[in-house]
Image (cartoon, rainbow, N blue to C red; front, side, top):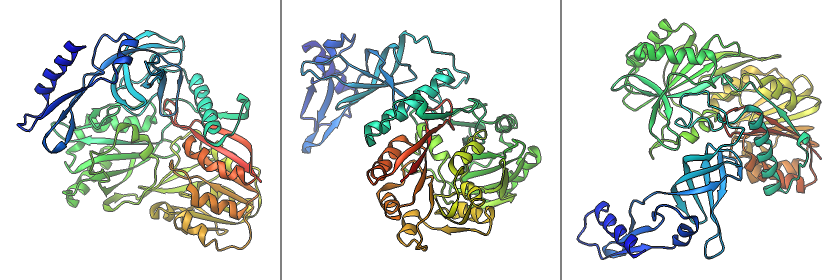
Length: 512
């Protein structure tokens, strides 16, 4: 151990900033018990900390180290969970490893360690699960969009149902024991997305791509097998045409295809130095070479100042509505999206469900077998559920905060739907109708409805509530007070709107 410590000191002096103020080099060896217990072939779990003058502490770069792990289960977020052998203090450490399966034995390279847990990656697959399959996408494990392509689709559904069940039980103490009690709605696992957002690079040559897994590093791609055929053709054609002299100010481009996968709308996000004439010139060139594109809208960039966003956030942000500042526009501003019973106007920047195969089934479960006088549709988007509810309710009150989506909402619903442009919590505080609604539908973002909205729903006391969720943890948190107030789950549905990823869409039908 002394020799190891000496090597760490030399390493510290080599890699840390040169400074005459260095007072001391301290080796923190609290991880040595774990190191010996696991017989790692490296002493790299020892941490180096350099103390500078003024008592300022700086932690220097660490060695990585390998552990031999057995994967216990998959957890929400796409990782597999493993645990290290107990150390001298009797405690083990949770280790999260992506792209694995339960029962597999892996040699994992530990890249990040925090109190109580660590994150690693597979350095070597020692014992593979018999369920493991070859990924279809050439960019799998490089791109951050997909997490489950190494798992057969039927098993993906089973794992997701188990994660949903475990999360509801752990957080909200909801016990759904039988597999049949969660009704599964499967999707074709490939080419299901009607929308994708791509990073754009114009130098040294034009390229489209995504961020690499767990980073902000650009990964050029030529295809995405979970996106629709039309989206893939347009991506490939743009790359083939070398971007048609794409302006350097364009940072991202989003493509949204109609239900028939024949026409699409494009919108791009641009930096501050964008020139309107240059953008419009490019838009005209795109429409000329790619007649499937009905229109192009340009918005100010929404990249965060703090290093942008991670690849893990790509799908999540893809599916989140927001209001954007328009810089220029060419051609159509909106596209018509046809479902089984309705046609919706969807403008550039508006939210619409991403899975082109399950929209009708989702609407049917959320709005089916429901009728009455008053219905309340919260987080209504462009009116997907309100348009269907209008057939069986006399009055529907829909609430949508995004100005863009609300503009479409007004166009998509009949006269017996009142579309309010407001935040849900603000609207419920001043509920304009004294009568209790017969049904409440809510489809909040991943952050969930939250305490204020759930408290308002408890006060409203609607006999039926239908909650559409895209995050099992926030769903469980929101359900707990509703169940405590006397609501019960009549039906639990899992809609696999995002095959090949860890994302879980669920619908809970509640009755009071």
